[in-house]
Image (cartoon, rainbow, N blue to C red):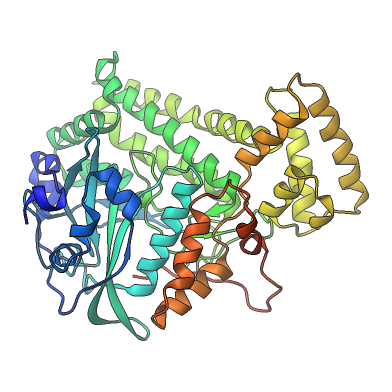
Length: 486
């Protein structure tokens, strides 16, 4: 399949790493591929020709039946702490086709998710079901619209196969786009099963691909560690600011690039509650909403451990350097989160009491089971009657403190409201909306899903057509649960 026709412009820099990090693996063919979702805007930004990719031949590529020119398909090896337990892993149902070089010179992994068994499948069939792949498409594109670093979804193709989980389900393949698929777990794999040279090669590759400025640092591997800490702290702060719950923050699901990856049991919080858990497998609440910043630090400590042989030839000094870097994580996270919260409240400058002001509001929201997103929308547009906190004396006192805080800054109230509009989304992918879209799609009607995607693409527009999607769900006797979808 020629690059001039479709726009594929693939390189394969990952194959320059030692072979311990991957296995050559072609996708397994499927009987009857059919394109069900395609991301035209993303295709254009990648330099791909959307019309050709949606042709019969193009769909064969997106379903794994054809390999485009320049591709060198492989499955990546990695490890991970899964709910705290270390294990050997790898791409058990994913194949990296290659790295697309865009017209602006950027490099993005193109990965097929669900194309069949690989050497890392561990007894699984390597396939994916349609519902979870559509779910990842919705949530990852919503995250992009919210301005949160994330993998993207180029396409979903139905395979014509049935996959068997608890019930028979229609099969599908997602085409995922990422800055890379390097994970904390990749480094754990290198540290556990690779040589010192393998580890160094991986670290140098990560620096070249994501942090080229670290190459000129006095200690490039310390600079790499510090850069990843900052990226991940900023990312998790963004999750917290919009009420996103990843659901499975294993070390194999934390990227070196600082992008959100692996949308399995993820969901967005409606009612504000720090202990919120949606994942059916997170029975202890390890990855609850309020625990995410702490788990981020824990995962980064595991990353730091892998780099100790590279940080200094003296192990004791290397360990101290790693500990010092990790010790900065909490303050870095708090700085990012506090800046984001100030923006959500229309605050341009910093005062020492801001943390208390924010904590009081969040405490009231949790105490009175207020909707997280809509409380900030009500504050943004001065529609306080729209929040569960309206009429509560403690909230009225808080409003006085907040108004006084805004009055002490030089910026106008109009500027403050604009900052809040830009920082508080009108819509998030509400769980009941996502489930409704998936239910209709399962019946062959994709119109509900496509309209939802359209609304989520510009969450800060605050347009009239977004109003119905901003509504919180009604009360339910059954707690909402999400599943990994593997």
